[in-house]
Image (cartoon, rainbow, N blue to C red):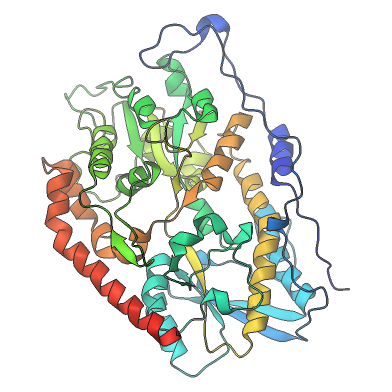
Length: 503
């Protein structure tokens, strides 16, 4: 029997049920209440952020496909890199929460629409070029390519994909298409890149902070849960912790991986763009016509945010990699051995083997706001994967219906399964972490700079030279201005050509 559309599951209720499976928050006696940096004894304890007990039905989370839609055994095929796969290859459930949810997404679309869904693997290093080659080959078997952001953008310029506004059954106003960030994915009047709920990379790569609770307790420092809940968690509040955890264990007079320090990272260079996103300043945005435009030059707030990033995450007295020649700057070993207070990270780092084996508990926090006047937290997600639908697809109506069904189902089933899986890790001894993970997910932001200035952001040594020397952000920006203007200018001209071909 064909599966009928189901009522949207309440994400809030799923989180509440999952939170009941984990232990309650570990409190301290009132007399031992830890202090925030610079504060005197606080008479109260940090109260857990209340979770909602119910969520009203939301039509924006349920697809509106016709109930009698049937494509009579048609084949839907998409291609993805193995590391970016949306689905699973086996033919039945196996009792694994996350992969079973992926299987359910596939089967739901198949039975709802009468199609056969399959996914093929491609080499990630050649994905963008492979997509163009395939589109020009005359083959029509693969209808959708799932491409990394920069591959998606460069490939889009070749005029080989449908703009999503022309596909019959895609409704980009729905939450499962992340309509709140759709303006970042459209160019002028068109959107070729669709970020769907079936692709988990954009969730796993959401920027966040981990705070080691054992280190905080040793140094008498409070966890900033209340500030996060109240919307008052700012970069100034984060900076107040700087220097509070510092011990030259090996006695060599410098902070190194053998010592104890305040800040670390799973990938230090991501802090630059994460900080700018969190502060709501951007290297690249949009001009009046919707085309990409440089926003970095003459932007004093951007300079201030870059300086703040240097002071927080690249201080030679507080960070172990300030003079490192490595490009990874991964401080997970320090964090898991209780030698680090904060670690900037991404949600997916919770699945890291060393993090899973960590004995101490840690808190999950969003990147701070620039100041309290900023309306929302902003959590950058990077290396997101986008659905790109080939113009060579023989039946674009079928393709759009399958994408709509799978992503609607994924929002109902797959994302809660990802959260449930995450909650199994021992870091989560406090339901306030559940609320903070939701904040990170719900405030995701994509950066246009990730699409089209790989020459700037991909050159990690460029960032390193700036932050490991006396080079100021202003002088660094001046040194890359010509290259940045060239990249943007070329993109704008290519987009004009693309737009003219669609008129």
